[in-house]
Structures are given as C-alpha cells and as structure tokens.
View: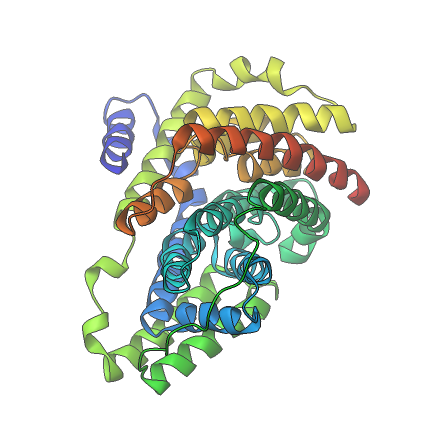
Length: 382
C-alpha cells in the first residue's frame, strides 16, 4: 500500500495534475507532521527495546491481583495513556505484541485484549494534537478559527475524548464479558534489562506528556527525546540503533496521501462531499458531518478522509466533529486506519486469528455508540 501511495503522489506532481502552488502548500502542512512522526516513532521503538512497555504490562498483571476483568481495565488505562502521549500507531505496533504475549503467558483468551488494544488506539486518539496525525494536521486549521495551541485544542476535545472512551469500554466489556471472567496466575519473571536504558527511556516517556501540552511545537520535544535516547543507546546498546527504526514506509504513504487528496480537492472533491456534510452547528449537524467523515474513513482510510472532509468544516466545533469521525469511526474495515493494518500484522505474527466479519460487526456497533456519544459531548464545549 505504501508504495502505491508513493507512486500516486509522484504521478500527480509529474503529470501536472497538482501545480506548484498546491505542492508547496502540501509540503508546508506535511513537514511538521512527518518530523513528529519520525521522532516519536524512534522514541517509541527505543522505549520498547529498553523494556518500558513490557514492564508496564507486567506491572498491570501484578496490580490485577489475578482477576481477569481488573487486568483488562488496567490494559485499557495503559493503552489510553500510550495513545494519548505517544500516538495511536505506538499502541497498535508496540503495545499489541506485549499485551498478547502477556495474555499467552497468563493463559488468557487473547482476543479481548487484542481487540481492546486496536479500539483504544483509534477511539482514544482525540485528546491531544500528538495523539493522531489527523489532530496534528488539524492544529493549524484550528488557528484559522481562533483556537491556538494544545490548550485550545484540548478544551474542545476533552469531553468527546471521555465520551468515546466510555463508549468503547462499555461495548467491549459487554461483548467480551464471558472471556473476562475468572482468574489468572502470577506472571513469569521479567527478563534482565539494562537499568540505564530502561530508566532513561521511562523518564523520557513520562516527560513527554507535560512537554506535549506545554504549547511547544510537538515535533521539538519529540526530536529532543529521540536524540537523548539515541545517544544513550549508542553508548549502552548500539545494536538497537538500526535504519528500520525510521518509519520510512509510513512517511512515503502519508506524503503520497497528502499529494493525492490535495489533487482531488483541486479537481472538485469538495463539491462532491458538500451535500453529505451539511453546514449547521447543532447536534444533528455535527453528527451528520462526523458520520460523513467516519464513512469516508472506512472506505478510504482515515488520513485521506480527514484531508478530504476538513475543508467542509468551517468552524472549530465542526472541525472537531470531523476529527471525531476519522478518529473514532475507523472500527469497521481493516484499512480504515493505518493503525488497524499494523495491528493486524502484529496479531498475525503472534498467531492470533482475527475474524474480519466479526471484527467489522463489532466495530459497526462501536461506531454507532461511540461517535454519537462523542458528538453529544462536543455540545458541552460550545
């Protein structure tokens, strides 16, 4: 998929379908987003190599005191924190295998934990600009509506974020209630870890949260964190520093999507979507817009869906409705978000079989519950 998007991006520029002005506009918007993506991925990968995620999962297992339902709730907390601070892709790529390995070691059904991880990656990615690439892109647009910085962004998203989280937990808890009964034994001993890399990575991850809400451009603290960890690993565990740490496939994919969707906008995509999106500011108007964004995401992936629907927002609250649709909505099709595709790969690698029809049916229920709840909560911030 990444190379198709890359070739498509090159093609629209090479053929002149996207002119020079459009290309420079895309480059200006994409550069800080891609810089953040590169830096935070390096941070997450090195934190995983240091054992931070494994330690957090084992801590959750001990705190669960042998009760499966309590362990599941602690995984909800862990997945939410990972998504909010380190982005949904971190949860999908790095937390998923840790949680699945823990479930296997404790002899628990892995499906509730697997599905919970990917749902949290999507539904809890609304709170901070750094939680989702769509949020980072929307941060600049928010300024045009008089909302600036992380504080202004979060003032509009905290209530929909909480509503989406509650909706997801209720649906998942009811759907997997039988598997979450019972108890489990003590987790096996933790593997040996280098204390310097472990504690450095743990402190860096903890410091990122206040840094991201401080108002500084998110790419800056992420880059500083990546450099600090890279230096420590160069001294202590040089073999962990490899080219594959850089998410170059994702960079190519995102760059291509930016270019293709901008080209489609130039050639009339906005006019096609306008009748579906509506124009009003009430609950039903916001729900219509969020529904349009969610439908588009499940058809064509959430990032191009956001880029396509964003011009139809027209206000800060309507823009949050778009984000609700593209962040909480991608629960039905496996290609609705990159995080879901990455999650499927991790499940396959761990030998966990995901029934896509059942995944889609449960996801449809999740969208029907979470998106309206989040839109209703959005009205509290008006």
